[in-house]
Image (cartoon, rainbow over all chains, first blue to last red; front, side, top):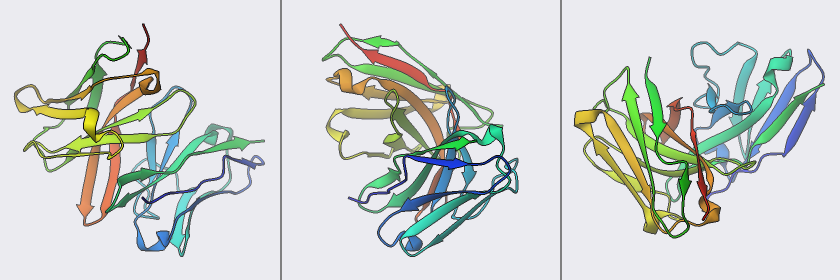
Length: 107
Length: 122
């Protein structure tokens, strides 16, 4: 079965750039999507198809995907960006796969 | 704006069956989308349970397949989840969500319900 690996936690200083990675075997050949989940709330799609932002998501959120790593980048990090972030792909063997999630802390 | 709302018992006894319904508003369940259930145990990550199309076609997580049934009621614009033989490990927040599949192998969730906590306990 296909697996996605995320760091448990990432810290970033206020106003700096945070990068959250999602590792998987040849993940660059897949379409990666990212969700933001704040405590007590449902996940919210922030990036789809590697690098596309849904309507209403700030331009500070961007994504890339190549080789064995996909990356969610949050520029000019704000206190309101503190949340758990999950990557997700579709795989022919296991259907929907989520990464384990990364807790972003803004210092 | 599509909205989804989960409903169902918040407490289920061990070995019983968990039953939840997701009401869809602001859009038709008969649109060209799949509809899904995702769960999240307390303090843990997201787990896909399965999905259904308005035609009744379903796909399930292999790890849960033997215990899961997802059905659709087009007349009520809703879909449902049944999970049998539950244990404490099935305690989780259960979300319903809409799936977009705009192209082959492109599959993601664009609308989510608020989630409902189901506790398995005697």
